[in-house]
Length: 248
Image (cartoon, rainbow, N blue to C red; front, side, top):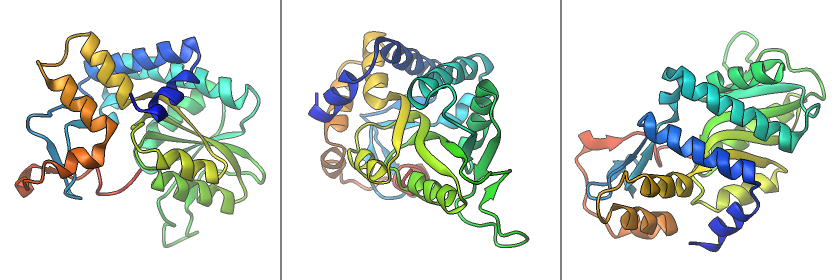
């Protein structure tokens, strides 16, 4: 297990470890994660991956999303404080529904942040009322390499808000640069689970065919090397416009 992964998990409390396991089980039960090491997914960047996640599916599962939002609210309060926030901001577009549910649980105003200014009218990048000096939490569905998070963070700060935390249901947990880039901006990333959590839970619950877990583990330890070793080009029709088409 990579040192970064071990260090990340060593900082978890018992309740956070339990939340990660519950989150992993929910992602598996709702088919929001897929494992296909024998026929890797090919993304528009050309990168190959034996794993795929789609957190957007969760909006269609009321009981599952309720549990995840409860766990998320607990995590946020534990790290940001019970009176440490003034507003919740969802990142366009996948973060918007989750931000609304988190805002409801924390009894806070909700905003959403566009990827770029609207381009007409008020030319707004942030929708909703953002008060000067408001302490804001950014919510998105997932984080891979963190580029979109930085864009949203800067937009909130330029509009007069303060932001120290971002929350996602799922952090890939295999790209160390996200922790570095967000930390450089003074942002702590809060996440319920990572690919390591999901893979280990899937193995424990018997979701893998023989040899699949070892292949997935190899990818998680070095995704770039795993992709380079599988250089055959997939047909365009099978490519997924997700991983590598934009960084999140």
